[in-house]
Image (cartoon, rainbow, N blue to C red; front, side):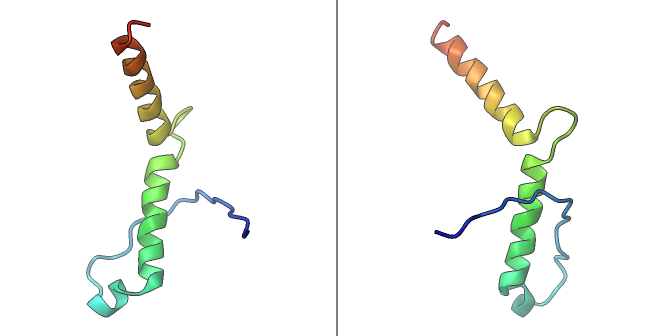
Length: 67
């Protein structure tokens, strides 16, 4: 199986004003995916958006169960 390395680097969203042919390319889709990954998993101080929401939902689940 191929080893997957996750690299979270600063990546902005690509331009929306390119041709449809360029938007249909794999490279454009990869840039969009990397930008989404950066937005969700970047660390702002001690937390990232994904991990912050996971922690909040976990606390709410515990509260709902009465724990």
